[in-house]
Amino acid sequence: MSDLYNRRGRKPLAAARIVEVMRRLANQNAPVTTAVLRKHLPDLPASSLLRAVQWLRDEAGLLVRNINGTNVREYLLGTQHRTWAINLSPEQVRQSARVETTLLIVLQDAERGRS
Image (cartoon, rainbow, N blue to C red; front, side):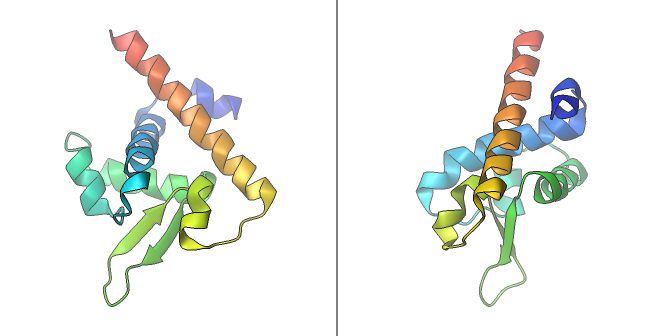
């Protein structure tokens, strides 16, 4: 975890921005797809966005499913697993929360450093 906090490269910052957007959109009951993420993060290159989504899936428990009848993938943060009625173990939820919180701290620190 401290390794993640110490990294300030594009991938952790892109992942942090994605988590921030997904948390904001959580209450709207709209599917979060790559198109939605691109709309909210227009300055993030598509390749960086896709790499960050993949990293979040592997490291932060990002949940992925196909929208019925389409080939479009929908994403959900691990901490919001109950939205899709998915049961995760308490350890999985803690790990997701830990990574999401650390990413948001990294983003805040990076923004403070810029201003």
